[in-house]
Image (cartoon, rainbow, N blue to C red; front, side):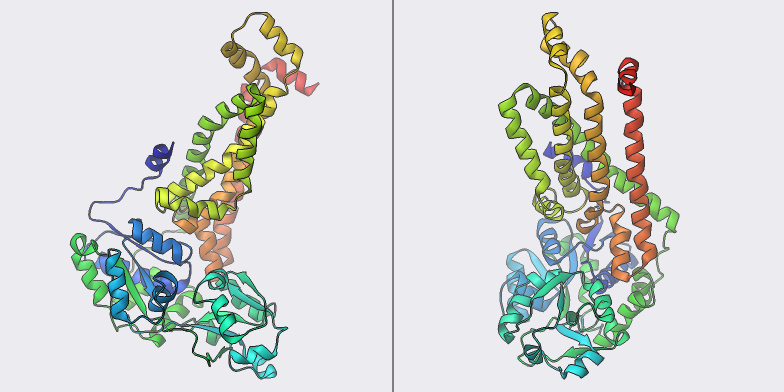
Length: 484
């Protein structure tokens, strides 16, 4: 089964192709587009795997070969990934080399973490430093989900400053809207965020110097020097070329000017921008990706869940174990299951299909079990009295009578998978989740709807499809009985 999932999800890429990843925020996407554009200008095939969630997903993908490079920050390497607080560049390079990785020299800007408030709110409260927050325990703090968990994030910051506030996690890009509306008072910022000036935010002084430097760099696999030496040379040549004002302008063009990241990156590189696909073409591509995720996972689930459901019906004690285990799988947080599959299948469609496969099991197993056990006892006893062997009874009597219930379970699994598959975009699986994530990041309702509306229509289509299959496969006599 694992080999089937891996084979079905294996992406096609040319022998000379390389992959670069980016995190789920605008600056990372822009820097990855700059790196990809530099490679394409050299004639190299470069695939950009966009918005792959948080730091740990990118790091794991890099170590395991799912991607070849991605933009990172020295503070994140030192504090979060390598656990070497205070390490200098040479120490970081040495630690990376032990893992088969390399790092470029800093690109030229320090995108450090900071805390920020609306300027009018900070002025009214007289808060200009992080220490100043101690005197206002009632302030509402909303922080990006990653910052809430990082070693260099909220837990350490709160302890270092003795902050009394409790914090809630939310998406980084939504935090600015929360500040603007007054829903939250304080959030974490990146010092090169374009929204700082746009929303007139006050950046609180890190008066105890908690945050380290976060110099932007590219990290890449050491074997890339042999596979694509001209590309790694181009990455190294970017050292010192992007200062903080330049990065803020690039971020502003995308976040505030609603320009495409690839176009902004191409302008900075001085190369021709790639032609952007139209909306219809994008929806068609995402539809194919989404259908692949849902279709493959559902077919694999049918191959496993139907026999398990029959076994559960035939062996009641064992059936309780089967139903309990499949029910337990359904309670696991979906995003966590997606991430747990990365070590087995890398990033992309593989872990998404594996996670969706697991989520499909319970509805099909449960309904197959319920359909067979719900057949009246006298019918089953009659079939047995006629001397029909178990296999014949299953195919000629039990499955046809249980068909409506089984198809209802399959329909439920398909509809659930259509919605859950949107999370696959966080691990590079594509599908309708890609425009939804981008729309949330850029506060673009049109992009959100570009993914949400087709996903809803696909769910309705799946429901209608299985209702049609049910009518076609149910014997006419059973349909008449059901109507009566």
